[in-house]
Length: 310
Image (tube, rainbow, N blue to C red):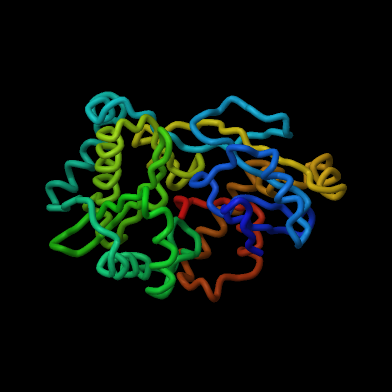
């Protein structure tokens, strides 16, 4: 269910509790939460809780609501030279050099039909990425154009090209003192040429030129893309997330901690085991329509998403 409050899209999900949140968290913000919460409370459809994240990079709690913390991946940028010489290691620098030697060209590109067609080729390369079903696989041109047209007034697209073939891209969304990697992805067939490393280097360079001090890249993770983030000098940063009961059901759910995701309640070893089962099954089958219900339920319960926002 989608709603609009004060010009901002809201989604409501779940059964008990039904939780309302910003449709584009980390790209839109609630800067005056008290009237906003009252507007959410009056929405038809009956959400039980409303949750929002405090505007990043301010991580000191500012409001008297129930607060917990999101752990996000953030790169602190002083300059490109600082990042290149002191923040990343030799292996990462060598990967960027590998892309250069492989004649991978990285440049800013316009948002046009050529870009959308190139994105579709990248997305349609495989139904499985990072061990899980890839949600963008086989989407239509029209759907992709609509999805990637968000925040165009403050976005930049960076493309990685090999002989004029788009083999990877970044959507970089700029904000107040922080930029966000909304999407970063490359073709699996050209992984040996390290296009994703080259794209990341260009993103850091652009942020440094703009005087942006923080680059945000989705949530922090220990596996999969987590290693890539570490190698590129991202660190885990805690950001306040607020939960506000909107009714009696919401107060009860918050007291019973039913607002938390299943993966937060399970032991880490159980989460790791479920993710490993999912990855192995998908690697064998490589067909999302035939993934078994048992594996799908285990993965959904753990709620581990290794993909960037967007």
